[in-house]
Image (cartoon, rainbow, N blue to C red; front, side):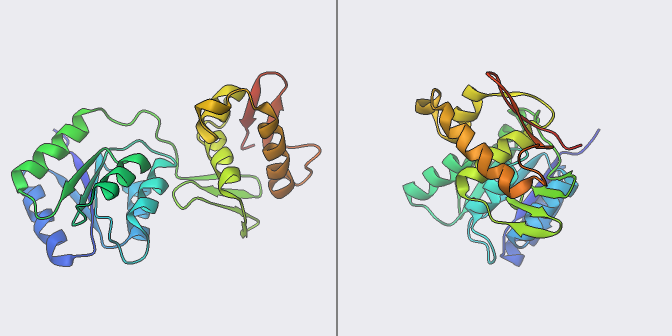
Length: 228
């Protein structure tokens, strides 16, 4: 029987070591990361079934790690943090975490939380974390776009739009879905927003913005992103 995979992310080496021993003793396959960059790399390459994440990492805020994973995967994320303020929990859950446990913790409770998170279902919409499209490299985990190896500066809204399209690459995404995911449910009729931001993205990403190769419009229907 395949052992369930858990990625443990925390900068406290002693705690990581103790958690790894306990989790392996209870039948888990464990990978560990001591910072956010390593966590994003392992989440993309090792494909855990659940992520156990501390928010206080030395290189990246924990919320950025959650956002990076959520850019391409719905793998369950259980936050394990010494921060007990209500707003920290709300921020983590709003960013995409599935559960929040505070330190110190009982091992039995943590195991139960991990089992519950994995029971909620394996991710069904996971995609590749790094997508190549001609001269473009879209890194969904690190939330960045490269063109010919150089960083392309995108606004938060531009990134949100291209992220949705790349996650659904090769498939038509309706105007209503894009407006809801990028701007919110109150904006589903603001189609002018899409025209403006799609034009901005084409100027930054396409070789010939007037004849786009990747970011395509289907008039009256929506948009799609093609990698070829």
